[in-house]
Image (cartoon, rainbow, N blue to C red):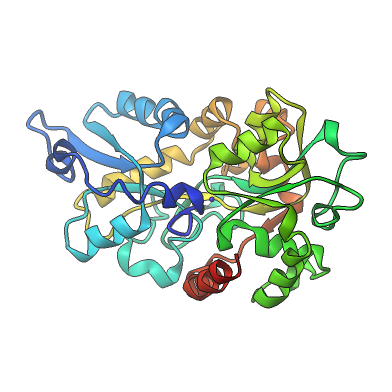
Length: 347
């Protein structure tokens, strides 16, 4: 941040979980006998969703005793589309990556009500017609400090195995950032990245193909860095930071690829009004600050981004927006299938 079903490996690993627990299905979109409105919120699970529960869901229920939040995971683009197409959305709020929620996919989503959600409080680019930013995430160049002669400072360095020897960890997913990184390394200006020249990107990746160790899961990418099997990796920032807690792994923030998460409301949910209120709360200043204290992601709230405790973390993505390379979500939504076929045949 799917991810293209959402953030590459994350959703690919999640697709198998396609059946909701019966208890969730029966509760979703209905008023409880005790008079409470039940909101079913789908997210990614794990420590990430645990942090959301502590920062968002639990405080919201405490402040709004007439609302009960039921959690589900994992969220998935295909599952959401199937629910809406069947006229039976079982989620009221869903978190998905930047490959979904673009205007071309609006038929599956309710427009965000910016009379309820404070649009001006969100960072530029995080207030879409059908989605509101949840947090700032990214794919970064992570490297082993102890295995390189000097610190890399560009994607060109990532592709320079003479000056920076060793193997490279790369997500085996076309939309995972490797094509953009290759073109940037090959001299394409950031402003001219899209439409991606896929053939040119693959030619560049060919120059290091024999040095690539492909990863399919985030855990694999972290382990490759921790073990020292690779000297550099194109990995999710959270995994790079976690690797750095137990091994000499650092992040180069000179150019990084933004792959974010967004809150959305499935079209047809009977609880859309309450869902918008929950989203408004989750993107507001104080809950966003609390979330950043629980997990190393960036905030989407302008005021929260200026809070000292948020700015104090040098590896928080929202502290490096000046070097952010946004991925073109609409381009990927329109071209993913064809690019995936080309990429998979090349691999």
